Length: 148
Image (tube, rainbow, N blue to C red):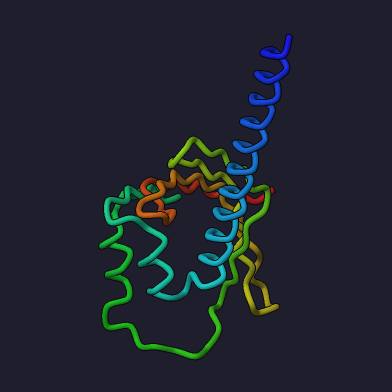
């Protein structure tokens, strides 16, 4: 009987510890995603968010990697102006599998100006790997949500 009680206590502790680890990973990944979206107009944000071996499939059906994304910043002039569009994430669903995580969410692109521009919405799914203690995206899929 004592063995069963000890085994049950051990399993309960193991489950609680695992759940706390996953909760921490989910919080970390949420922070990584939100920080990236907040600074997505900067080369530094892209350099740290995407893994060197990234496979990105855009909502336009194009496939490219990190080097292609970073090349968009070559010869770009630095600006203190805020970006034209502010990005945020809703409906975030994070699933952690050890050092791999799937992050699915609805991306909201909100124009800063109030004229005729309207918000755009995308479903995004990213595969993150934890390498050397940091989460980076190795695969990304973006799908534009058509207007209602």
